[in-house]
Image (cartoon, helix red, strand yellow):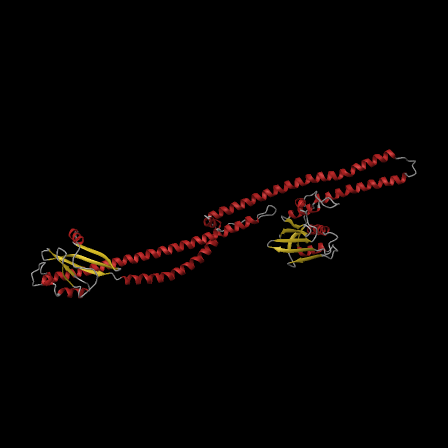
Amino acid sequence: MSNFLGIKRTSLQVRIFIAMIFLTVISSVLIAMVTIYQFKKEARNYHQDRLQRKEDAVNEHVNFILKTTSTEVTTANLPFIFKEKIFELSTIHNIQINIYDLDGKLLISSKGNFIVDKANNSEISPTVLKIIETTSTKKFTDLRIIDGVTYRSAYNYIKDAKFKPLGIISMPIAEEKWFYEKQVNSFLLLFGQIYIFVIILAIILAYILSNYITKSIQLISERIQKTNLNRKNEKIKVQNTSSEIETLINSYNQMVDKLEESAEKLAQSQREMAWREMAKQVAHEIKNPLTPMKLTVQSFQRKFNPTDEKVNEKIKDFCETMVQQIDTMSAVASAFSNFASMPAQQNTQLNIVKVVQLALDIFNEDFIQFQSTEEEIIATFDQSQIIRIINNLVKNAIQAIPTYEPFPHILVKVARIENEVLITISDNGSGIPNDIKDKIFEPKFTTKTSGMGLGLAMIKNMIEAYKGTIHFETTVDKGTTFYVQLPITN
């Protein structure tokens, strides 16, 4: 059962490869078995035909002797008629000859001159006599194996001129196995050489065909693994493939269309939700200073005395308090305006490497380092938005490093990965706790004592507008790395 499960877990390419090799081996073995069987069958037919030819030739010769003899042709005279002739017959036809009477008793034999078999030929068994007597041809071929050697003995009647049976003639012959065994061995040797060549060829063809058959499936599998809701997924082009694979590819392409549609709906839903949350946050932030402003105005109105010696000082304090609260509301409005406006992209062809370097020039910290795998990565983006993304992430990285860190370090890297540019910002700061990881990109979330928490949400919107992605990896007390992936479009 475990072997069966193991086969089921094997990849389709390996299973096709094994199946083709298995079929090649099985077919080769069957061909060898059928060929050997055919060789043996032809060998049996060869010995049967050989014995039949000798039997016909001996019978004609016997009939000629009977016709030309001067002795009366009777059963009793057969030993006298063939006393000298039987050895001549045996030598001419290269076969042992035994002559019996009609009761199966041996009358004369050439065994002394031409010994073939090791059996006792003194008489014919009653069974053989019965068969010879009852068959229409009055002939019978007996097959015996003695000491591993196969013997064939042909029996038929000796007849006079009137076709009256006089006796029975027997001609035993040993099968020459060495002949067809040599043929079989020669065949097996040749077949073995061809078989090795066929196996090697089968392995090569099986590998090529299994790769060809599974190439499209593997491509679909790789595309499915790379499918991401947060980015544009590439469709597969159908090129000279089977109907089954074409159906599978079309299904994948339809899934990509539906996924993109779902992603747009999800993004729209997220934007609407973000705006609702932002509206709540802005209302809350504006409402906070309004209450103390109201109380301050009411208290000033109630306590205001124009004749008070400190009236000018009190008016000054009142104005400063009001201005401070108005500045707070102005900061809230400005932050919201910056997040909400998201000016239209002014896309131009630019070198991402130089733009990132330009964004880093405004920072004076000497622990910020920059690396790039290439000197030039040309793509179409809005330069100001790229700079805002880098500035925000680097600023957050600086603020994430505690003041007591003896060796602060920030590394910004730019690299090309296929058709994407990857920007990474790594720091050795305090990291992001697990309980707030899921809130990092929420518009209203912040861990700072100041600010509205719109920075990461804003740059996330910018990146997603380019069909890109942003994510991070963090370890508490060791640092955080943000990954920005943007598609390269020219």
